[in-house]
Image 1: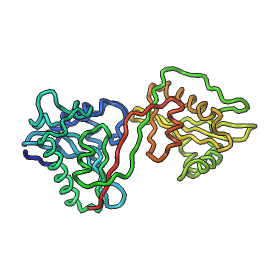
Image 2: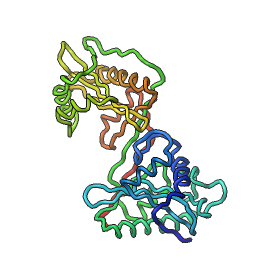
Image 3: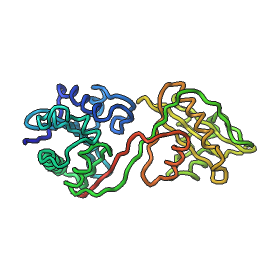
Image 4: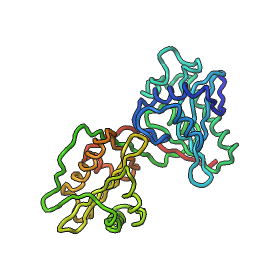
Length: 310
């Protein structure tokens, strides 16, 4: 088996889009920061900031590697998607869809050779770029991910959970007894920033919160008790076809249903725009995961992160 990495050309884009979509089947893409199927235009856009490499097996296009820059002198393999069938290695019906579902023969010597040679090619590419560290980000469902990490002696460092919520109808916003929820205005920015600092580190400055509230795709709400701000939620509709949110409730007012009421207001906002809400939560943020699940978010996929010095 011959395996090579080289820059992708324009005539490879349709194949790479197809490979990506068969592997992911829609949903949120961290590399393209969009929801739903990617397009050739997305690949051309991402090439302005990242390296798009073609994986060739036996001189035939068989996959893609998307390389980005991390902190300092690190290189990140953000996507490694290979379809052995495209390179003539797999029997009919054992293509990238089966790879994405984890339906592979782990003991197949040809697949083991693919992992070794792909790992060697990736490491060689990283060394040519004189990177000091190499990171691999892989969807948990990608069966090449963990074997690649083992082959390259990468250490597991973290995981990122992608949760999503698809609002199907408007719901009444019902704050708990004694509380009110209203739309936020620019004058609320200092108080929102103060609550932000109490709940999250790092937190934006008041000027940054005020600028955020002025964006056309942003809506924000303040929860009050006796006209005293005790919580907030900021929701933003992104061009990538999804929404996200930032929420904070002061410690003494938690576990009363206030966070759920604020999330309902945001869900109504996203429902009007017919887009899902997406939350990205690191593995150690158990409290955030619990909150999102309590208001209806479900796990869509998990990204694993591996790293080693070069």
